[in-house]
Image (tube, rainbow, N blue to C red; front, side, top):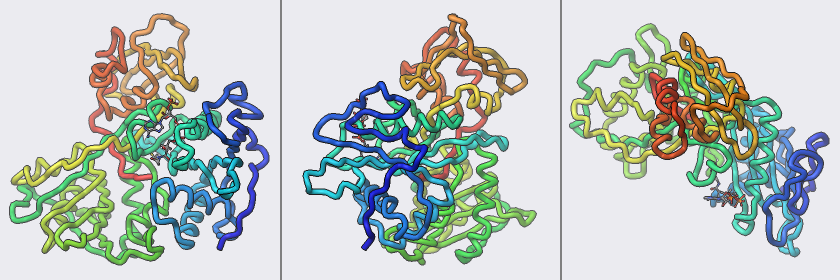
Length: 457
Ligand SMILES: CC(C)(COP(=O)(O)OP(=O)(O)OC[C@H]1O[C@@H](n2cnc3c(N)ncnc32)[C@H](O)[C@@H]1OP(=O)(O)O)[C@@H](O)C(=O)NCCC(=O)NCCS
């Protein structure tokens, strides 16, 4: 049994403390948070400093609260230990809300709200990686919802990220209606593909390189290198933690606390002997469906060869792959394209721009041009008018006091459009971008490829 211990805010991080709904000691002090009801709230921000369970009771309670929020079975001690080690490697920031008004029925040190962030990078293509505040483990206890706890945690975290000079925040969502109000826009779409792999499955183009089924250890010896190369090249890609790579490879099963021996591994090696693709999968209980856990292809050749390999697994008649790029070339390489069904579509990666100039200057452009855009940001981080000038594929962005603006958009729409994941024309049609130069902005923001993220977090 873990000992429970009160943990106070680390010195120097007092800005995050709230009491009875009002932030003390610093930013937002003048803002009354929209909390109601019988609550005596305190926000604590802390970071795990040890992977030893007994040293980290507050972190362990945090993870238990996350499990509660997502209706999980509750993390075992080995799961907490591994999570702690991963949080240490990631320099994770834990923000938890406590309600001291327990009526004597609850432990006041059990968080009623959880929120975790750490620094990751987001690919902008061509080797450009921008640092981002990656947000996850957002939960509020069922008894404490809709009283502003998420809003308090999010406002604090974004303010800290902005203060630290991070140009972006990123998250993936379980419900799509929550985050636009905080300035996040869906930025990279992903498909779930269900592939029929009976006799009608065949490619009518040649594949190249070779595919090797490997042990878990041999797979792991190359998986990071393959992913890192993919990440460097791909707009929309989000860097991975060791814990995620391990989980996708079956090193550790979150539910059992043991390795998952049912996970299989394969690598694609190109004609020069370099690993350029990696895949892990599991065969479901029905023994005829293979569910892909991870699929990383650095090149189109690796993509086709890995799909071809999966499509020819004996005894398997269906392959299901989530997190498939929307522009997957496989469909166009199949002899019978209708074996490829998009069974679900999701707005996988959401981005929140915190620095308009850095984000727009990080990407490359296919055409030159100039647009003055006004960004509306209800939270006050980026609002203002900017002149975007593109010359020879590179952008310069300057704030301007010029009252003449060509285009107006909210910061969430900018997050959707910046990597080309959502066309400007679609956002304009949805009423989220307007002004005389919408078409010019649409022309400027066109990209060669849709952004791709393969990183759940
Ligand atoms: C989603 C969750 C964290 C919201 O927490 P909360 O403390 O109730 O949220 P708040 O009271 O701070 O609400 C902030 C705003 O978001 C809105 N909102 C909250 N949850 C929402 C939801 N599920 N769908 C749509 N809007 C939502 C509120 O109406 C409020 O809007 P407003 O401030 O513009 O009036 C909570 O319901 C939860 O833990 N859900 C289960 C786990 C989960 O889904 N986590 C999200 C992972 S992506």
